[in-house]
Image (cartoon, one colour):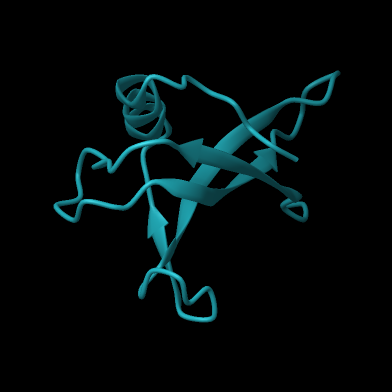
Length: 95
């Protein structure tokens, strides 16, 4: 009875105003705009649509100023939110 897993992906841009570190990573990152991608899967068997977060990815320039060389970091959403709060900006996503 296994059905097809339905995944939805959303992106937002967050802005850091100062250098920052995300818990779980040693590298300090420079201030700037970062794309955050979230994947969620549809929970099956409910009478209403509900999604469960599967992954949160932060896209980081390997070489600052060279967006063609990106790394993708799997991050804990709460660690990202904490870094934004420490930066003093809270969550200010840009479409």
